Image 1: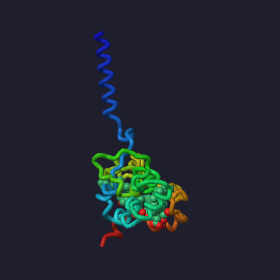
Image 2: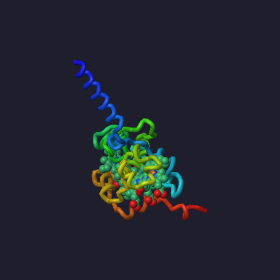
Image 3: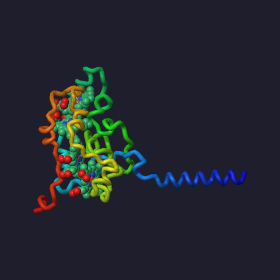
Image 4: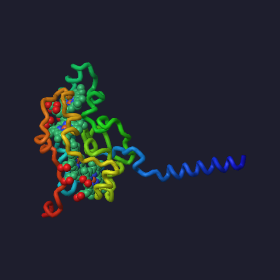
Length: 186
Ligand code: HEC
Ligand code: HEC
Ligand code: HEC
Ligand code: HEC
């Protein structure tokens, strides 16, 4: 009986140790929001400001427009800002299949199509040490896949206002390179 108890206790301790040691990679990556990325990415080339000028940053706001409401009403839907059928392409969280929102992050649906819709939820790769090391960042969930297929998950004829998608031309409109320090300085 006593031995049994020791066995149970040591199993519990071992289990606790294993859980305690579980690397970040075992937990699902969580959303932190574009304004978290901004804290570092407002410098050098300023990808944050470039993104903010794009339609992606307004994608949630757009769903409150009279045009959006009419499109939704014609489909028999309610408020487009609450309809999954619209949010799935206009809001990062719904597009990614509702990953958890990091409690220390700044994510809100109002950011529309944010950084993490293309780069993956950032809770585990956003630390400076990891970000500077490409392989470590990728191992912690960073994506930087510049492919037409990534875009056409949303830019397709399921979009009620879709006309056409030209990858090269439309990529040029949202490109946001880091300008090397030596060029940006002055
Ligand atoms: C603590 C500061 C910090 C935060 C927060 C941060 N980054 Fe970074 N990021 C960096 C640094 C530093 C680099 C490396 C820049 C370089 O190579 O010149 C980098 C590089 C990148 C790269 C290129 C990486 C590669 O290896 O190709 C991407 C993409 C990126 N960040 C996206 C993001 C996104 C999206 C977020 C928010 C979820 C974010 N970053 C948050 C500091 C940060
Ligand atoms: C999560 C869905 C989603 C993904 C992924 C996405 N977009 Fe978009 N994109 C949108 C939405 C929604 C709008 C319209 C926002 C608005 O008007 O409020 C938009 C608008 C745009 C616009 C401006 C309007 C237009 O149609 O010309 C460009 C340019 C653009 N996207 C390029 C891209 C490129 C290039 C990629 C891939 C690298 C991409 N997008 C990936 C959802 C997405
Ligand atoms: C399959 C992805 C997708 C879905 C689903 C979607 N949208 Fe969009 N939406 C887009 C993209 C991409 C754009 C950018 C222009 C384009 O390709 O239509 C856009 C643009 C818009 C615009 C701006 C059009 C303009 O001319 O500026 C409105 C308004 C809009 N969507 C409303 C809605 C409403 C309302 C719903 C739900 C009934 C919805 N969308 C569902 C992807 C989507
Ligand atoms: C519509 C998709 C999309 C969105 C939204 C987006 N990115 Fe990117 N980003 C990309 C792709 C694709 C690349 C890789 C480009 C390449 O390889 O040339 C990239 C590259 C980068 C890089 C590296 C640039 C370099 O010169 O190496 C940084 C940093 C970055 N993004 C940060 C951000 C931040 C911060 C946000 C939000 C404020 C954001 N991105 C929003 C698709 C996106």
